[in-house]
Image (cartoon, rainbow over the protein chains, first blue to last red):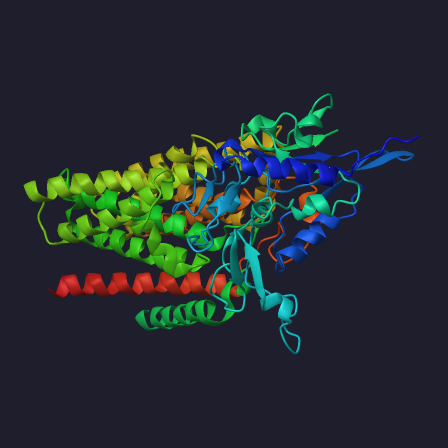
Length: 238
Length: 346
């Protein structure tokens, strides 16, 4: 008899519900990406773009591809790159108006209404995780701007509208925020639920029994640019 | 001359209004992977230029050196105008230009930029007070010392804004501060040469000594990048050598001025040519300093992972960027000529 395996997403949803019962400052959201499971399908990238109706040039979770070895011993490695939600975020320090900051649960967020668009944070991120909304549309120079580009979007538990050229979120820096609005509703970040290979784990790193903490044990863990001392909360299993 | 400057200024202003009201950031060539370009370089240059002007002016107001008396007032005007010209240029660069005032109203002093901006604001006020005094004395000494300290401070804060960015090893160096300060001193002596100061020999000596220091730091930076095992540093050095802007710096910031200034019996025309060439050369060096940091992506595979506007490592300023910069610089030059004329008449 084959033992019943629970979908990791169900386990992580349970973990999330438990974490949400604790005060925000007691949570430490983290992500683990199993590179051996990632098939490079880009479903996470597409889901993220569609969830937040990201305009041209804005991306929160691209998947980087690297070819390793020489024919015939060749392999392809995929590295999804969300925001690392650094514990010591280098993007926060140069912001002259405190428009970007680390929340008590460790997520680095942007206050779009405060951001002046100086791009100091964009230049300061060693992971290239911040992009700028240059105010462009996919359906620009066509008979009309399609509704999906100017309709309301939801980020940071607020609704935003891109129909006005000079108003936020246009002109602002953007970044992955671990789907803060979904977490608040007890949902997992969209890149986690849409991952076909179940390669992305998410949860409260302060809970040693959470799946996200358990998968980190006994595996080789890679941290991007660890030498910079930014202490990312995104880990890669290799 | 004034008519040409006025036409250029009007053209630049029209383009600036067009950028704010119609085109937005879709008419610029900077983006997410090259977030800072020509406007940031021009702003950085003008700030340094203003500090140099303040230095020259305060040689008279603080130290009472008589050789600097004639040039003190125009240099002070130049410092004020350079700062006032720099601010709209950087304002154009902001995604939300009107919110730029929030740096003054709601600053976060953990960042260096608010310190720099507050320093400009105070130096502007101090300089306006200094302008009221024609002769160096007790009154000017205190204000001048304040002005000099603030000039050093805002260049230092500007340098720290770049120098503390760990994402770009090209900037992330303590050398960034002395480089910016030494550049300001060189620009100060260039201004002195252009303002027809007396004592050519003294200016020539000071200019060549400080220029050689800056050139040594710039070339030293390139050599360190070239020999670095850090790929982004190596790429920056290769980019510099392949960029015509670097060769402009080499020709106008090193070869021509050093050749001219090597002559001990330099004529005032040759001194002015050397000074003008140095100013253009150092503007090129500033542009190269700002843009060379972005020639490599944070991960080699990142540029091909997702494509779109602003997700490119190739940067050439757009016509709008160049037009606005030229227009605003022309407006600054026009304001300077007008203010010098007015103060002479009065």
